[in-house]
Amino acid sequence: MFERLRSLVQTPGRRAVARRFESAEAPIQQDPSRQLQLLFFKLLMAIAATDDRVTLEEQNLLKDFVFEHALTEQEWAELAYYTAARLSREELDQLVETVVAEIRTRADRQQVLEAVRQMAQADDVLSGTEQETLNLIGARVDDVGTSPVAYVTKTLRLAWRRTLDLSPEVARLEREAQEYGRNPVLALARRAGWTSIDELQAAKIGMVLLVLYSDDTVHDHELEAFRMFVAREAGLDPDASSALVDHVLQIPEDLLELTYLARTIVAGTTGDERRAFLTVLAGIAHADGVRVFDEARTLKLIARYLFVPPPLPPAAAS
Image (tube, rainbow, N blue to C red; front, side, top):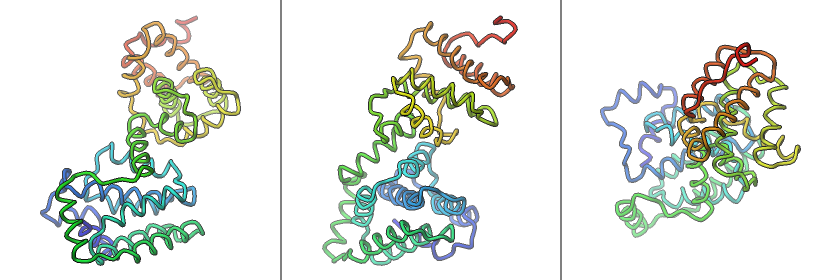
């Protein structure tokens, strides 16, 4: 399953696009080993985030690794979750154990270790946490011994099933990653311990983020209006609402799916409630006292998806 990875770590100078079109082999979305391949990429993503930041060099290296696997938008979102989640040492250990347990050959183990080393050193700064993680993975990889019987067993198990046997910790991470691809606010809120926030509340918070991101700059007055909205909507005190706002502002704009968010809001509210919510959105967008074209266009688009009339211009509203 790591043949393509071997070509990447051995010939890093060749561009991914060139390598992809030099080969006549098409990516197979339904490859039985795809789940393991994706889990390995998620491990690389988690390693890149162990120092609480993912540099451009680390992002480019990961894109180089995954390009030939033709990831879907949902799969990209799941990868992004492993950056946002900030895995604990125990969770990272479980993820390593799951990946390493499925590796069948010494050559594959060496390529996995080399890819992990490249990711840890991609930004030319090997932090203490990254070094500890690298040592951990190196020890796990070196400890794996594959006898002929074990090799056959793993090969047959791969042929018989298309899903991995995940530990409870890794299975939970995978469920959270899938939720992150649909409703990232809900996934991050629950990850951080705000378990009282439901799907509808998270969708509304995500919709506010869409409006804020439509402007080039998020001003202090908009942030304050956002915090007040979160406090009212989620029933949080000022400190908790500020912490949640800071948390969700890490979500990339391209992970906020208007269709999903709107469908969730429409299913859980009445027409009057949606009109009132659109008025709140407009108030947050205009809290900085500046009205820009992109904000107006975004609000009109949201109104269409919520099946309510667009907000009136300031002159008409007065």
